[in-house]
Length: 295
Ligand SMILES: CCCCCCCCCCC/C=C/C(=O)SCCNC(=O)CCNC(=O)[C@H](O)C(C)(C)COP(=O)(O)OP(=O)(O)OC[C@H]1O[C@@H](n2cnc3c(N)ncnc32)[C@H](O)[C@@H]1OP(=O)(O)O
Ligand SMILES: NC(=O)C1=CN([C@@H]2O[C@H](COP(=O)(O)OP(=O)(O)OC[C@H]3O[C@@H](n4cnc5c(N)ncnc54)[C@H](OP(=O)(O)O)[C@@H]3O)[C@@H](O)[C@H]2O)C=CC1
Image (cartoon, rainbow, N blue to C red; front, side):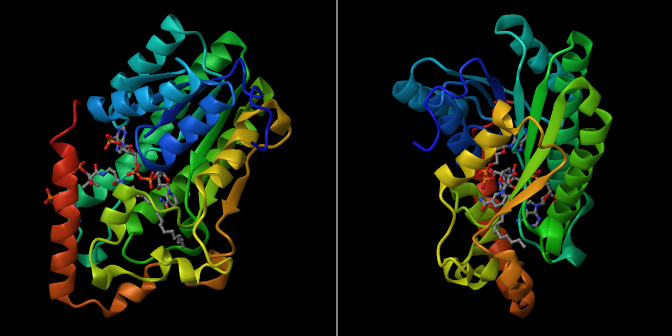
């Protein structure tokens, strides 16, 4: 362990999308360093299993709620429940997201909305519901959002995601200034590829869709990122050790985006038939997870 195992003792951190992938890894990392962690997602069973798995390792520190972050009333009620039943949050990680690769000309309005509203509205609703309470009660808080390096580069074939993540970057810089006087810090991380099950089903659904953005040999360091590396960065930003850092988005990608293979530009060569196959494979993965949703 790089940090003292109790360095987050007394912290209470909400991680949206904390039942899978990066969010679950962050939940494990924060709980292993002493924090109480609350995880959100739409699938009760997935959340319950994730919390139980981590709690077996660290003790009863992880709690879950099934919440759709696109629903403001649900977000406000769930944040209120944490405050009432456990106490004030000290930190928030805006991590939940939706995404899939698609030619932009073929995206339906609902396809655009599914991605943009999850990433942008969800992060705003959750940040505002926590921030309002911190301000009303004179409490400090730290918000960290999980962005992606295409906020710097853009990326074809994931345009709603690129737009919405850039919007959350704008929220981070804007509120860092507006809320600094209250002791509330907002920062973000921009990871390169950290392979996770669902993201890779959405972004690399067929052999034809494997391009630079999802290939380890395209990373100058020659490997994907490791969860503990991302965990250490987010831990620092959530901790009192980063009290003078606000409004920053820190890239963690082994040099990937600077070497420029990091977008989905390689998908330019896919035919309509290959796109239809990619869509069918990604949709099959979505349907499987939707059948498990509780909200
Ligand atoms: C330069 C940077 C390089 C960095 C390189 C790093 C490489 C990796 C970077 C990763 C960065 C970011 C990754 C992520 O954000 S991954 C997150 C992936 N996880 C998820 O998406 C989880 C949540 N997903 C879902 O809930 C679903 O999969 C879905 C996104 C589809 C949303 O579900 P929802 O129930 O809200 O929506 P519907 O199923 O009703 O669908 C809505 C409309 O969207 C259309 N659709 C769905 N899937 C596809 C598809 N694959 N292709 C085209 N269109 C699709 C669907 O048909 C609906 O539209 P219509 O009603 O009009 O048909
Ligand atoms: N993996 C990678 O290489 C990279 C990932 N990122 C970012 O990291 C974050 C995590 O991605 P990753 O772990 O890979 O992907 P996952 O698909 O595993 O994580 C997304 C999470 O968001 C939750 N979620 C989606 N929609 C909603 C919603 N409306 N309300 C509540 N929860 C929701 C999902 O749970 P459920 O479906 O149950 O709701 C899921 O737990 C994302 O923000 C992604 O953009 C950034 C750069 C690289």
